[in-house]
Every structure is written in C-alpha cells, then in structure tokens.
Amino acid sequence: MTKFRKLNRPTGHRISMLRTMVSQLVKHERIETTVAKAKEVRRLADNMVQLGKEGTLCAARRAAAFVRGDDVIHKLFTELAYRYKDRAGGYTRVLRTRIRVGDAAPMAYIEFIDRENELRQSKPPAPQPAQRPPLDPWTRSKLSRSFASPKEAKSSEAED
Image (tube, rainbow, N blue to C red; front, side, top):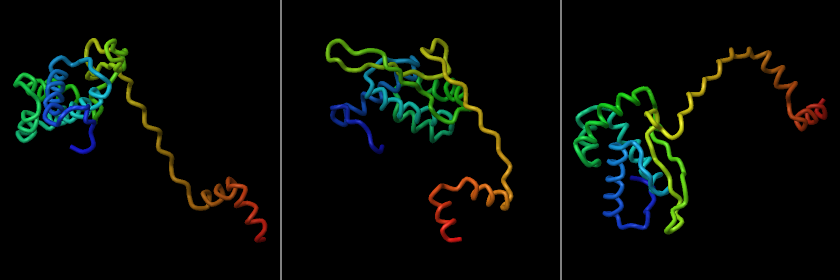
C-alpha cells in the first residue's frame, strides 16, 4: 500500500476495519460511513473488483486474503466481475449525505455503480471527438504565421 489515511487508529485496527468495510460493501452494495473512511474503502473495493475481473486462481487467493467470507469472494468473481467486464475503472461512488449528530463528522454513502436502486444514475460515457485529418506542412506553416502571438509578429516585422 502506498499513501493512505491513518484514520486515527493503530495499524492492525485500521486494516481490520477496512477489510470488514470492503466485505460489507461487496455484500450489501451500499454502506454509510464517514467521508474519509469511504475514500479509503473506495480504493480497496476497486482493487477487489479488479481482481474479480482477472478471474485467475492467483487473483482469487489475493482477494480471499483480504475480504472476509466465501460468499463475498463468490460475488466478486461472478456477479461483480460480469457487471463491470466492460468498465475500465471507477466501480464505486461516494455521495456525501449529512453531518453526524454526535461529533459533526461528515457522512457519506459509498455504493457500487450500475446497480438497481442506486442513489444517483451513472453518467453515460462521453463520446470521443472525431479525428481530424492532419494538415499538410504548407497549410500548417501559413496558419501558424496568421495566428501568431502579437510579440512574435512585432519581432518578425522588426527583423524585416
């Protein structure tokens, strides 16, 4: 693991908490937690879905070493892997909801996208712009002179 939030917990407690939260997210597909924890869970949950999409024995063992429960592993490698087979990344969404009453912590829902009963519909993929044919060198040279910045135009006039 690279840079991460410490969440004001010892290492063992933090890793155990994140493992449980990722497992519960996979199981229920939506959980409510604080914003900082949701951002950390998002990283780990996306990695677990990526392992599910690989589908190899090595990936299954790596996922089983992190998440808790055989039903969670089965869901990762069957349902979620099939749902996100065409998606390159960004399998989860964090939606800020409220301020918690006891300690004023900002709360958020973290959920998988493209599922039933999701809180917000996912955006359609942005269309790719059409490819323009390349300009020939003469036209490119003429355009670069006509749209040159004012400083370059003044310096070229002074040289003449």
